[in-house]
Length: 331
Image (cartoon, rainbow, N blue to C red; front, side, top):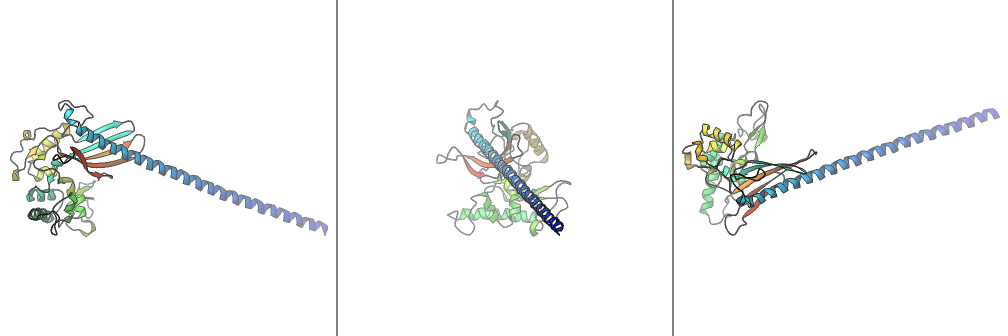
């Protein structure tokens, strides 16, 4: 009996030792899981913080490029127009690239006089522009007639805020014109073969883009302005604007090719002739610019784009040059 009791005590002791070992193993696994989760969380937060920091750095790099461009406009009168430095803006220039110690900034420059002025353009030219942008003819006529009616009504009242239809104060006021939806105003990308009328807006976007690529429909905001009027600048006008005002296809192709190689100073040299509605072509620069700056940090996969509308002062009560609109997201 004593021998049997000894075996029982030894078996119980061995069972307790096995349970303790199992508990230690489970505790080690739990601690390892906690440590792994903590390390993964810390690593993720460090990566996220680094990404946010790079985004902020890229943003201020792009913002600094806009400020530098403004300073160049201030000093443009002191630069020899026939032999400007490569890094200095020349009136009529459409693109610039600045190599900086922390990154590269690409500037896209559009003179506002390369667009049709909402307050002055002929309704027929506006309707042709909208059709060329892929909007169906009926809606194009409706939008052009709505713009003309709004202009006439605003001239007949004493205040810009009188009546149910105020005059155009900013370009976004076009969204209140019948027929202008957000898709028409900002544009809509479509794929060949896909439904061309997003969210039930049938017949707004007839036709598709080239096979294998996206096509932009609408986007009238990129071709219209309220800041500059009169003649259309061939350095900045889109092909759709040039066609809308009646530039023949031959001179138009020559203009597009020439402005990729140089700044066009004399638009009359392209032989566009007399344009419908009395439209005129000019070269050189503009009194107002929309500038988009895209900054790419060196060695980092981070890019940020900002945009600004810059305008020269119109009279002695305005600053000689100033930023009148700022787009933190570049749109």
